[in-house]
Length: 159
Image 1 (tube, helix red, strand yellow):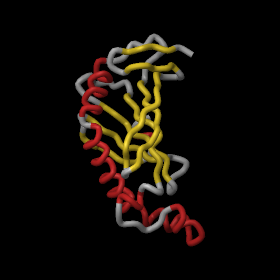
Image 2 (cartoon, helix red, strand yellow):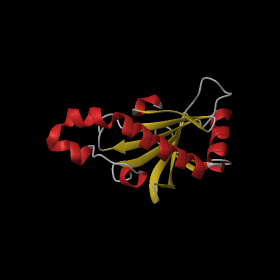
Image 3 (cartoon, helix red, strand yellow):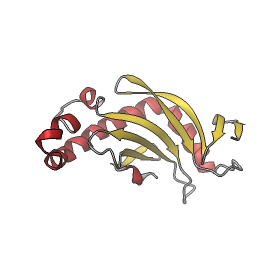
Image 4 (cartoon, one colour):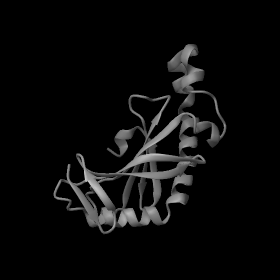
């Protein structure tokens, strides 16, 4: 496995993209997840990725709190549909009725923070990927552009 020490990203390992483990705080809990920067083994990162990384980590706590709010909002919008699909047997376990971010923390697990290659170098893009109980197959993602949340949905919005 290849390893580099990048002046901005720090120590990274190559595994179909450049990665390292980081700890973030979401829903009042520290969570270990993978930071992933899309690039080939040559480690030629886009300027947009480096800039997005700097901006994201400069404002990370605020951005993650905004993500928590938007995830709760999204969950409350889609929950009834999932509960109907899951039926009585699984609805309360996989998609319970909740009203707070604290309750939501039991249903999701942050897994990856992604800095993708972008087609427009003027856009700073970051994806937060999470596992969730109500959508185990497609997961959940929060897509940031220029430090604003532009979408919450299935993981494919950032992959």
